[in-house]
Length: 88
Image (cartoon, rainbow, N blue to C red; front, side, top):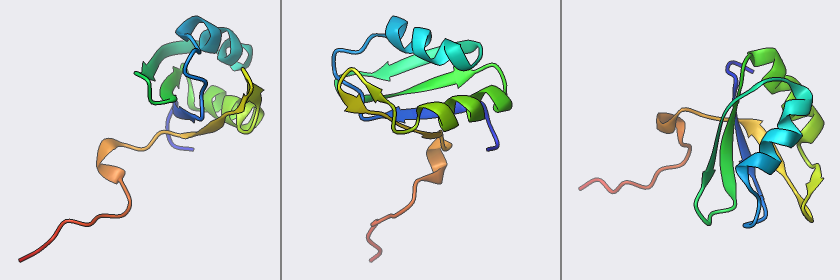
């Protein structure tokens, strides 16, 4: 891993920032949490790369609120794979 920010997907739509903070705090210090509307995903920033990696390893696939979370390193916005822009 290169950073301390994690992507967290497949979240229940009813999950709160407080619930995520309690869960991820078991693996280090949570600096920031952002749940993206009604999309079922969000981002969690840990205080260090090592803590982020520990949280990722422990919680990827973890059943939380009836759903198996997906936890991975967050990519920078410009790192999207795929494409599809048309060229004329």
